[in-house]
Amino acid sequence: MAVDEKRFLEDLHKLRQFGASGVGKGVIRPAYSEADIAARHWLAGRMAEAGLTPHFDPVGNLFGLAEGPSLLMGSHSDSQPEGGWLDGALGVIAALEVARSSEQPISVVSFQDEEGRFGVTTGSAVWSGELDLERADELTDHTGETFGCARASMADCAASFVDPGRFTGFVEMHIEQGPSLDTQGDQIGVVTDIVGIRNMVVQFDGQQNHAGTTPMHLRRDAFQALSLFNTRLNDQFRNVVTPQTVWTIGHVDLHPSASSIVPGRARFSMQWRDGDADRLARMEEIIRNTASDIAAQSGMELSYGSLLGLEPVAMDHKLRKALEAAAEQIAPGRWRRMPSGALHDATNVSRMMPVAMLFVPSIGGISHDFTEDTAETDLVAGLKVLDCAVQKLKSSM
Image (tube, rainbow, N blue to C red; front, side, top):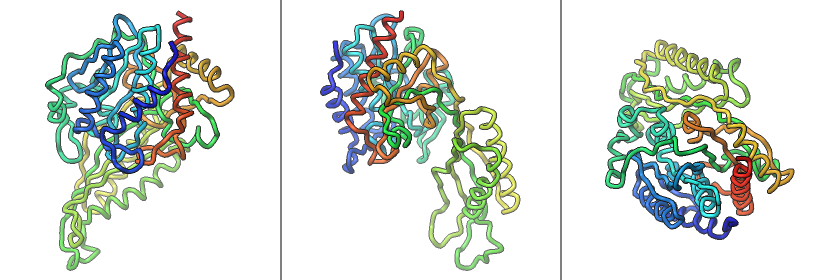
């Protein structure tokens, strides 16, 4: 049975109504929010209608289970605080449509908290054993709420963890979240590998004081320490990183955050990504040494949160070849092999089974923003490649 393009697009647009931002097609659907939970219950209903058995696990991962051994497909349906409508959602809805049409058993998953409200791809990390549930429950978001408290909001529908042994592999379709496909006019990207990531919180504690009467040379200004750290870190990384390496200070919390008070505390996130595990370790060493030097120079106390991260992962050869053959059939001459600079649930799942990923273009390379979008022709092309790859996998067995 052929995939139904119209139904696929309708489901995508229906899903974006949960947590619709009112700005373009953007969504506000963070993990465990009312919109996120409502969306998951709607997805569970669609899974049941497709003949799958909906199953919520203890952390809110939603599975639509086929009978017997099956290929697992999907992504996530939570969003960034200001998120796009396709990030994660595309992979879930595409998997659901392929499951409806395929003669091969396909199970579908929407992982919880991929966007990292509490950690790094938290839902799939717990399911895969990368992160212990007890440790996960202690993780906090930027407001101080714990993961354990947040997941309690889904306790009424939670069941046991799904046995990963029932799945033969995992394939995740996603938007690229970068400019390569869009600028080159390509329609499909077949992922070769996913970069590794490290993430931790750094905190400088100085001395809160009056902004009008405290001389500059006597200040122990935590924000000035952060500013100096950021500038010096870029210089320290210069001979270590490659053009593909990225690092970000994405969240900053100043205390007491008042215009007439010298900040006494600067707490900030530090994240870095690269495809080489040794380089990631070297970057961590530089970050810690630089922070220590700045703290000593500026009269700061220095502390760190837990270091979270995932290792670089290569895609499974057999699954990738099926995607490549399908891409050439559906989009001849308009596809490419490419690495993923973004983190995905497939990284965690690779601990348990073979994995592969498929990308479609992001218009303007924009993601994690209300303006995130992809042409419908490209969305449908990705769906067709996914479906074609499943057929090729079946014929090769």
